[in-house]
Image (cartoon, rainbow, N blue to C red; front, side, top):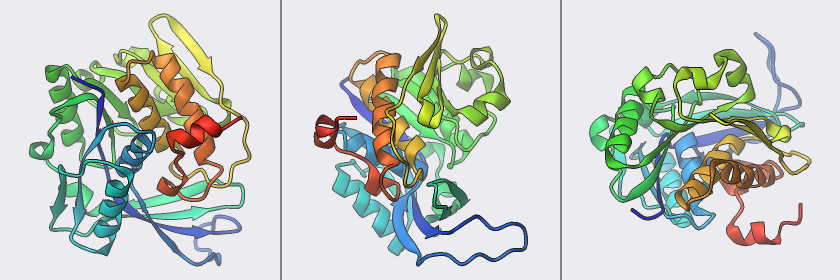
Length: 283
């Protein structure tokens, strides 16, 4: 079937403002000028994988507007196949992001066209791995995972934002990706019925969880500038290496390296390294 990665997920415009601190309830905080960047968990994941020389197809939806053109151009420039990116009769999704001086972010997402995606839009032909995230309708994700299982495609879901998935969907995931905070709330991940799981732990790397136990994969030490989209970089890199035949632990180690580089740069998609940059990285 080859090593093609199919990415199902959101495509947004990121409206980013740097702030000295996040405001409390009812409080106003002055920030920087707004930067408008291509984003969305799905589009981010697709670009991250494509910049690593992966063959990537993207399944998603944007609006017929300037933000949609921005996202489509970014995907195309990265080398992503956008033949399955639909133009919907709704505005392109938008993420409103505040970033503090320590690189941490807070995000509010307006789904827009992402909410118009339907199961009929899902086409995984030619893919070896499906990686999906949850800023699109859950029935679409569950349909895609079922289609992947029926087609011999390895199914990966990045459980972000957290949502309830059916037992049948969970049983098909290899792996489920969650961050450390989500993992703490969910409890023992294999008890959910997934085949494997990866828990991302930021600067502490990631835990790879299989029936054989838990293996900690370290992350290179870096000084973060902006953590926006780092989890998506991890998911894209992981899916790419799984499609190339890596073990889950080896893919997670590679993904930690990619994500650690991304947090040293501003923005989401603009921060993702290429294969050439990774070869020159000495961390």
